[in-house]
Every structure is written in C-alpha cells, then in structure tokens.
Image (cartoon, rainbow, N blue to C red; front, side, top):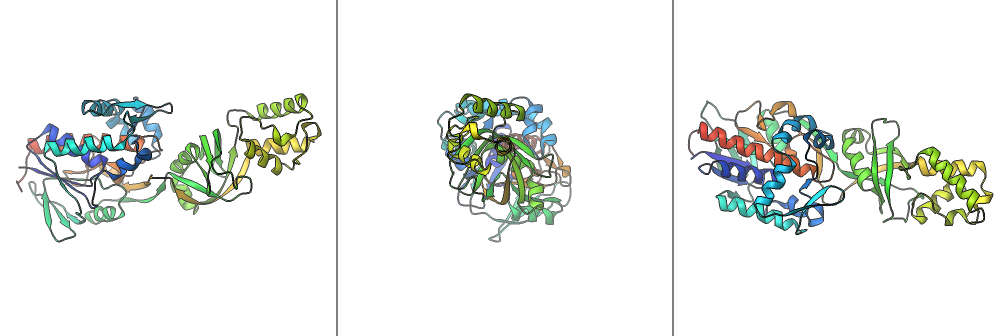
Length: 417
C-alpha cells in the first residue's frame, strides 16, 4: 500500500490527509506531530472561536490580503477558495456565519467544533496520527520508484512514497529542508503590535478609534487604515496589524525602531477637520475646548491632543489663537509617535519567510526540486493579514496536496512499505 507521510498536525496537514483519503482510501496516510496534541493553532485562533475564513469569494480580491504569496495563490484560489472551503465544512457538519467585518466563524462560536470535525473525520477515514514525533532529517529518494526516508529524533526511520511538510513556522524544519536542498527565505515576524511610550497615549489603554490612518515616516508605501487600539504597551488593532504584515521585512531591517504619523480622524480630510474646528469655535465660543471632543474621538484622547497643542485645560474655543487651531489640527491629522519595539498579537504566530515560492509548483503545491515532496501552510513564504486569510491559504494548500498525492500514488504507486 502506498504511504503518504505528513509532517505537521495543523490545519494544512489535516486537510491534506482528509482529502487524500477521501480521494484514495487505499493510500496509507500518517501524520507526524512533534507536540503532544494536534490542531493547536486552530484551537486558540480567534480567541478560541476559530476565524476559519473570510467572506471573499473572488480569487483576484482574495489575493490582495497576502503581503507575500498572493500571486502564487491566484490559481489555487480559483480552484479551491472560500466557497469550496465553507461547502466542505458545511458538508461535514460545521455551520458557519459571517460577521460584520467579513470574518467567518462556526455558528457554535467554538474552535473545538472545527478541531473535532478535522480530527474526527481523519480518524474515521483511517488516518494514522503519531504525536511526539520529531523529524531530525529527510533523505530524498534515489531512483524512480524509491521512497523518502524520514529520520525521527528517537532513531526510528519512516519511509514515504509521498511526503508533505506542513509544520508551520518551524525554524527546525526550515533547516531540515535547507539541508535537503531547498532555498529558505529568512523568516521575520509578521502580525505584531507596536511598542510606543508617549505621554499622549500613556494611561489610555483600552481606548480605540474606529478609523485611523497610520503612515510610516520615510516609507511612502507603508500605510494602513482601520481601527486603532491604545494598549498598555503602545498601539494595536486592524490598522497596526495590517501595517506590520505589509512592512514585516522593512521593520525587521529597521530593528523595529521608526516613527509613524497617526491620523486620528481618517474619515475626514484636512480641510474638513479645519472647517469643523472653525465651526466649533463659532458655535460654542464659551465652551472649554478639552471638554468638547470632535470627530468621535474618545474624550481622554482629545484632552491629550489639546494639551499637546498648548491649549489650556480651562481655555474656551473663543480664546484659541490661529497657532493653537493649527497645532490642534496637526495633532488630529498628523500625530507623530516613535515606535520602539514590537509585541506579539494575542495567539497569532505568523512569520514572513519560508520555502522559496520559485521552487514550488502551485498547481500541485509540489516541490520543483524533488518529485512527490509537497508543502502547504506557513512552511512556505506565504502570509496574510488577520481575518481568516492564513487559514484559507492552509485549507487551499491542504486540498491541493491531498488531491495531488491521491492522483499520483493511485496512478503510479511506488514500492510498498
């Protein structure tokens, strides 16, 4: 019986195992997982709810959410994208729902629903699971019908007619693949928050702005718009995470020390901000400025911006000078903050880097260097912003690998193990 071995018991690995067995039940499939349990990232994602996909069914739109790998995924998403993913989960008993921001979760609001479905389906199909199995090295097959040799840390050797590496952002596995002969793009962190120490936001943890624009000073291409949350250590939320993903490599080069301009009122143009400030001055001249927040900004943040603009605590709108009005506008539309480091975002552990995409055939997610060696998930130099996109890449890659292995081992089975 042909043997398909998968290194990594995560989303991509399980999806590949299931689709292979569904297509070709005669193939022996084994998942090797280094840890004590499987599907842990699925379990903790989305705050334990599992943001398994995003409401974006057009492949050309979907790839825009991938700072690295979007071009490579265009074809695969056409063949197996969001709709096919949701259909598969629906057929296997996982009802889903779309939230306002486009994120898709199981109706149960529990990641355990997804974990149980993947784990249970694979087990029912006869997929073998071996936990506590650390892969030390891989030997390529020699000869047309030879097998891959997987050397485990305990000295055991496993043979595979087809091999998939889906171990996520694993430095160890990247080293194993590099020794085998694959080029690895050096990994750097992605999806992180910014550490900022500034009196304008100190002590304001928990305050948020629904629409802010963040621009990295000196980097014209690095800007993002979305929600912004002030944290105990700096700033986070959608705008910052998007920026961290698109600027992952540049920020690493800068040592995570740079400055940003924050537009706290991104839905208003500079002219609109100036005009609204003039209207406030005309219509409520006797009111204290720091007690009349504008543009939907939290009052405590507004007070800090006023203070920075040299506006006194008891100063009224009528007494504002032209210079103070201009300074306040600048604090609202171009508030400069210095970033000094990064922090991991909740349970997200995403990196930019991995197996060089030029060495992968994305019609099958197969190595161009070694036949019947497959990759999917974060082991590849593919990553996305938050919102279910990294999981979508895993589902899509897992599907293609599973189907490809089923086809290749059914048509041309190799030496049985």
